[in-house]
Length: 456
Ligand SMILES: Cc1cc2nc3c(=O)[nH]c(=O)nc-3n(C[C@H](O)[C@H](O)[C@H](O)COP(=O)(O)OP(=O)(O)OC[C@H]3O[C@@H](n4cnc5c(N)ncnc54)[C@H](O)[C@@H]3O)c2cc1C
Image 1 (cartoon, helix red, strand yellow):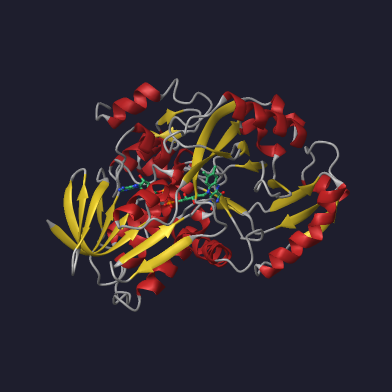
Image 2 (tube, protein in one colour):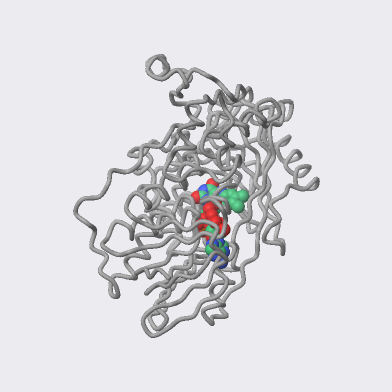
């Protein structure tokens, strides 16, 4: 049985960020993930906005870590090639009450340390987003809100962790824990390991793991968010992220460009009991169509490319629940509900700060450079457009997925990467293959053939 200084449970964005940071020290670290791949949980299905934290609850840990995460991930994206588009957001007021709420929202943003918001009139709203539905009365600009690739973020962090020496254990669901005087024994579906410290970053499963440590302090409620993704031809309709004025019911439905060149409408917010219910529903999609028709009627005339749903790990409180239990050498990272993509790297810093008094987390002198990730962003050059790359390696000129223009060279690279995909779905998240208009109808068989090694 292997023994590590730290076992981080959960290979989503949060766990991968924590493992990466601790992997940069002299500590031995394992990243333990139940599924066959990293980034298969909530981190794969969200609205993929790099938030400023302008609308967080001031004074909360979440407010601080989202703001910090916005900077950290923004810089990390530049270093690794995670695509980010600095589109900015426009929060739109549709009623006199919402218009009256704008100064308060700007003041709240300032209490969160974000001072770039401006109130604009209806003329300016329509100048910025001409396709908006009729009736907008004014708006609040949030220039720092951006769109990002959540898939590449998760992968970059996990690959960086592995490059730094972290042992990635996929297909290892932790089913029991046995805390001892010096180490905790973790029983998983693929054998046992032990660790001096355990970090619980298990997302939707964090309360179950917490209970294995004997705690009874919160329950995760999966809050489903469904989304409609429109065809790339719709992209000019949404030059920036269009936000509603938040209400007590949550952040509400937004219209946003996606980093892959589409437009999305969503998410819904519906509390469920089934933590695996990532399917979409007729009622949810109908609701989004109605909302979309109000917000941007012209968008509803465009083709829908895909629908999807993600589950937020809601824990019935308005903040993260991050807590160190020194007696059991255990850290809970819970309630990372709807901002964890942005905050992940800052959460990792916070966890490292908590561990400081207990472990030597000094960074190692010579660390490998951050990985250079393949670009999945539509706004940036891709291999099929790069004559020099194609001349040097003709596989970058052989398109396999025609909707998304994914080449054989990119698929080959993904299959040979530090964390290769465990299935074609993982390949999709690494390349965009099968992610377009036909959703794999035309290229799916070929992609599977290449995945299974049958490609000529
Ligand atoms: C609809 C929606 C929209 C969102 N929009 C945004 C947004 O625009 N911007 C933003 O910043 N955030 C957004 N979020 C939030 C963000 O996606 C999450 O906060 C983030 O992905 C959480 O990451 P995580 O690592 O905590 O969880 P996950 O990605 O779920 O990772 C947890 C991992 O733990 C593993 N696991 C669970 N139990 C065990 C066990 N017993 N043993 C081993 N492994 C285990 C799971 O398999 C999973 O891979 C959104 C979320 C949703 C649902």
